[in-house]
Length: 388
Ligand code: KIV
Ligand code: ZN
Image 1 (cartoon, rainbow, N blue to C red):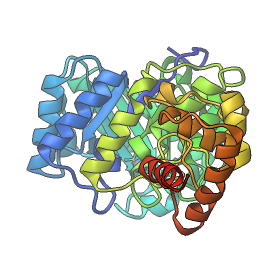
Image 2: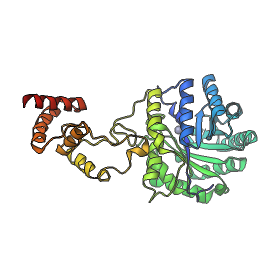
Image 3: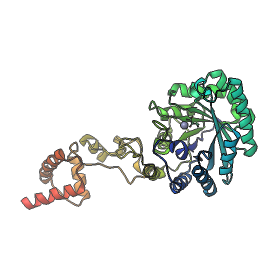
């Protein structure tokens, strides 16, 4: 599959980059549960962990590899033989194992291991060759690619492809790029690097400037065919590209982004809630797709519009992400149409005059309370009946 294909692989790294968020550590059992949910929902590749990092990570990756049904199981390794051997030991039980090895290639990142450009190029050749001798599914990443000098980036990617890498990931490690640049970078790499047509280019974006989803989709427009992402956008600092956002964007705007994924979107809400629960990272109310308010409408104008035709204010169907339906919470911004609808749902038939009365009492209560619940409405009706 190349950049001409309309299928985009979804590579989930919730259990690796996501778990690297300070405070998001998951237990062994929790990791197994999340991996199973990812596999069930149709994620193509699961980056299950960083096996050299700890005994616990190694055991989790091995167990996930053994239990995997459909997904490729990937383990991360730095650019040295010990890391790569350990990653392979962990993933080798999977029906489809992958080793993902990386090294920072920008000038700043080259200073970390203190390697010259030539020394690093040699290291890349040796480590990718070593990984490829263990498995035929090898991913290589030039970390901080978006801040790496263009000529050097082309040079090292060519070396990695010649040494046997089958996927080249282009990480925006510090969330520095912007959509136009992201698309252009992938497009130019595919046009320039010898051998680029035979491998998959991946995009791996961080959200430091809030552009991770836009940058990932732009990279796909440029020819990338693997998106690296996490559930709820969990990840280092401001997080990674959110899986639910790219998947739903591709589904909803297929007219202008004609690429498909294999993800069953109706499983999104459940896994989002499970990841929030096990990581301890609550989802913000107004988070796209999975936030509590993503399919909720409180203002009178919006509620009235929704009751007439949900497409007035919803571009996606809540059922498509696994929700039972739209929610029209009642509050001080709500209008008569929503109150009447709620009363009917609760089994009260009201005429216009009675609705007028209840509406006055409802507004009075809503001014004092953030949200008016079903029990509050029932109580309002009872008070009304008693005073008649
Ligand atoms: O952000 C990054 O560069 C990474 C690499 C390990 C791929 O997570
Ligand atoms: Zn990352």
